[in-house]
Image 1 (cartoon, rainbow, N blue to C red):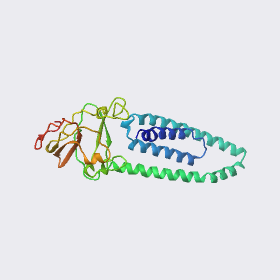
Image 2: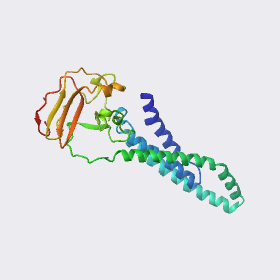
Image 3: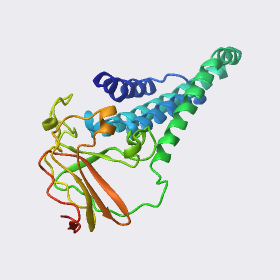
Image 4: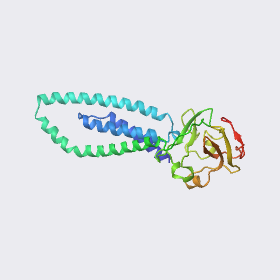
Length: 266
């Protein structure tokens, strides 16, 4: 997991931004392809990245580097184009050489355009995942006193693994961030107490009635198939015409009972 994060969230964005900044050609079409690929990937990883595992603020640094690379490479492109135009005025026969070189590099443009199309389709798939497929309901946020981050959310599998589990199709995973923008005190987090959100109080996001409670289960990390089969300590709250499930609660933290009426914020 850590190697995957380092490659997709750190190495690739930096390599692509440097690749854009070092663009030395004089053809606007090739620059646009490079600009498009870098932009599409950076937007994609900004939306799907699990930034709470590295730092939520890292994309801000990437944005600054990206803007710098765009400005630098575009200025270089304009200088190279003006320089090439002056050369062609004095040596018009070089225009034939440019045509031949363009034909030889045409396959490169085809590859770049294919990559760009794939990335744009992925971006569109992610953006589609943010749009509700059914009528949304208004709820108050159930946590207070800190900065929280939706780790999994939406209905696209690119931004939410919950749809893979039938019982948690509309689920959200929420984590708390520390000052460094990280959700854990250690990387990787080997224990539940390493998570910043561990021990936080969950409050009712609306006026409702408790319809089910599961308590007394021991705390443990839940991944893979275990996540679907064992929802841990749980409270089911009926409100706003739907039933909300608060899963994976801490051992000994459930203080409500079935049939109990809760006000928003309790």
